[in-house]
Image 1 (cartoon, helix red, strand yellow):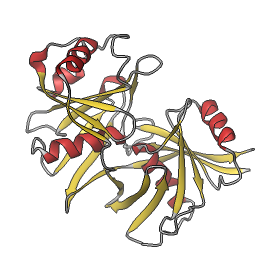
Image 2 (spheres, rainbow, N blue to C red):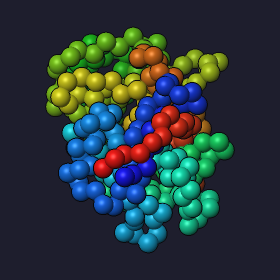
Image 3 (tube, rainbow, N blue to C red):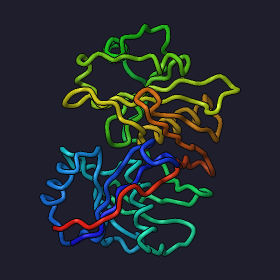
Length: 277
């Protein structure tokens, strides 16, 4: 039997963020058993807390979607750190939890009442070709005139990102159900007016195996923060909203310190129990 926690991430109100299922003390589970359980939970990600093999790490995390294992993902990182700490985990460094995953060591620090992870380096960046942009714009059913810029922002899931003129345009998007199959994940961001509660609106569209909109996405916001703060299109500290178009109220807190972008958010325990396996 294994302790089980389901955590809502990037929200301070249960059911308004993005949930992750966390299985504790999972060293005895095979990769096949983990994959089977992740398919059964049918959440965007299910994670498994294991003993680290790197002596610098506090725990090792394996991250599964219903289809595959991921080297890294943002909201599962924060949700799993929350579950590990809530279960009595003690970090080697009281100021920073060190998570081992396939992508390497990920630092997670306390940011006031929140947790924040260090944005991992991009594995693909740079301009989007004119041909690719034409295909993405057609998929989003928008004109080129509302696209301020487009960049590859891939830190694992394959993100290609578009900066649009404003948040209202982002919220009005109605992507086509087909037409961008060459792109596994498309992220879109647009600014709110200066007096608004938040600085940006973000939407994330997962294109593989049919179109799905992700409620709140840590990996995308990490990449967007690196891009926009790095090009001074965003301040060094800002808040992004995500999930508005699908009835969520995600809030992602981005900040840069000493050249490192941190991605923070509130985390709320929603379900606790036992996995009988």
